[in-house]
Length: 102
Image (cartoon, rainbow, N blue to C red):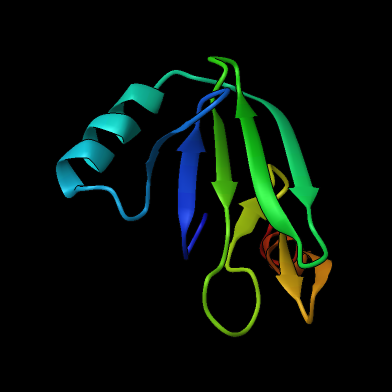
């Protein structure tokens, strides 16, 4: 989940981003269907998310407002990784909840 600004990058250019037209965004999102994430990278002094797709595209988050980067990476076990106070946080709140209710 990327809550703030983002872009989809080709090798040498930006294909589209959060400021593209609604039509272009909808078409671009549809074109992502069926692609696989081959690498997840967190980079920068204030961690931003970069997803490398098997098509040679990258999805990159970048916050442009005060506060923290606004993204979360949801994991299969129900936990997630996000940023709090400039640091990565692995939140297992859902994992505990799911185990307690199982």
